[in-house]
Amino acid sequence: MNAQAQPTLLNSKVESFINRPRTVLIDGRWVAAKSGKTFDVFDPSTGHPIAKVAACEKADVDIAVAAARKAFDDGPWPRMTPSERGRALWKIGDLILENLEELAQLESLDNGKPIGVARAADVPLAADLFHYMAGWATKIEGNTIPLSVPYAPGAEFLAFTRKEPIGVVAQIIPWNFPLLMAAWKLGPALTTGCTVVLKVAEETPLSGLRLAELCQEAGLPNGVLNLLTGFGETCGAPLAAHPRVDKVAFTGSTEVGKLIVKAAANDLKKVTLELGGKSPNIILDDADTELAIAGASNAIFFNHGQCCCAGSRLFVQEKKFEDVVEGVTKFAKGIRLGPGLDAQTEMGPLVSQTQLERVSGYLRSGADEGAKALCGGKRRGDTGYFVEPTVLVDTKPDMKVYREEIFGPVVTAIPFKDVDDDLINRANDTVYGLAAGIYSKDLARAHRIANRLRAGTVWINCYNIFDAALPFGGYKQSGWGREMGHDALSNYLETKAVCAGI
Ligand code: NAI
Ligand code: MG
Image: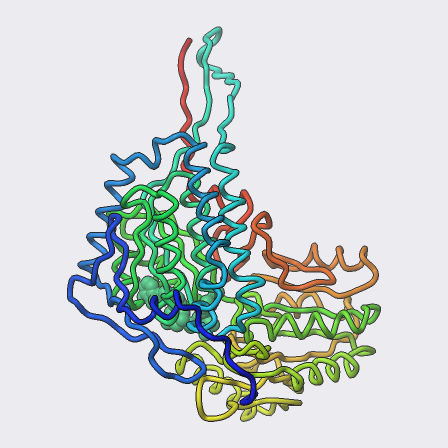
């Protein structure tokens, strides 16, 4: 770790934001949890508490859902002109950019990610999502449909579809990209005219709370966005099961995703899910070696491996295996670990003690089952939740480190002979299907492989490229539905067919 470098001095707005116990937004007002309970938020680089937030429970969920229900059923939001709604979303995007430094610092402090990454990626991407979705407000259209009705010869009809907002949406998000996940969820829900109760992750509630203030400043009517802080079982579960919610959108573990589906089954709420992954990143023998090494490293080490789409299974064609693995190992050894707010830091700590234990458990299990760590393989230091970037070889398909999502900076490098030698089956041999990467100079070959991969995103000669216009989501147990792009709108719309005899 890099003890010498000076941490970024906290912006005075950030200081005052974290120094007051935070309340939650319900029906346009900032209120404490009904029970008066709070919980601590920790700096993952030290494990020390940095802020206090409200511990919302079922009683708070009930009030928040009632507020969202009233705002949807009787309020102005779904009824105002699409142009007005679009302008409010645009304003949210502008306000995010105006407060970029404050949001980036909050994100880095709370999640542990490098401040440079929060400034360059998390915050601008969140702003861009709102700007992108603002444009859709005025472009959500149905169709006119010519009818043939065989039992009504000669009759004439005017038939068309209307796209209507689905209603009150419960949204539950994780801690790996706290602000960006809030944006991915809120953008399409708000632009379509839905109202929302959003529960942010208990590990990282700060940037979401600040975003909710900015949404109010942008002029969202009371009750359109209600934002709660609280734990999964006591706040998330009653929200997902709430009978007055029309739809649940969840990002997080596949395990909790399955609980959400069960909770929603009672009254058949609509559900979308963005869950885990164990994504294959495939380096072919004709790849540009430097590009492939940089790409493979970024695919797993970006955000400390805490990405649902992390390229955690690195398949390298035999001829290139040694060079690529050596290059990725060298890259891993050179990564500078440190607190997110230190400007020199390239990789911060994992988000929590729980994640440190989870990832450490995988590293132990890999070692016990015979996997070899070419670098890393353990915790770094004894303060904060730092784990060394790790490259594993000699893994077998039945090992836990090979099959399960580790969600840390741990890649498994696997050699293969040729594409026809079962590469596709091996790449697809996972319960997940979120993302995949292919590195090759032969684009036709790369595209043929891309077509055969069962994954919601395939990156060719690049990795981790995200854009508000590009849909993202999973095949198989990686989820239901897509975030971003115009695909995301359909998650929040009902189609009404109107048929008039004329
Ligand atoms: P989690 O799925 O438990 O938490 C995600 C969100 O769901 C949080 O807001 C949490 O409060 C909420 N939640 C938890 N239990 C709930 C319940 N019963 N009902 C409703 N909401 C509930 O994920 P966690 O424990 O933070 O991480 C565990 C693993 O999940 C990670 O190691 C990683 O493998 C995976 N994960 C995947 C993410 C993704 O982007 N797809 C993000 C975070 C975690
Ligand atoms: Mg959990």
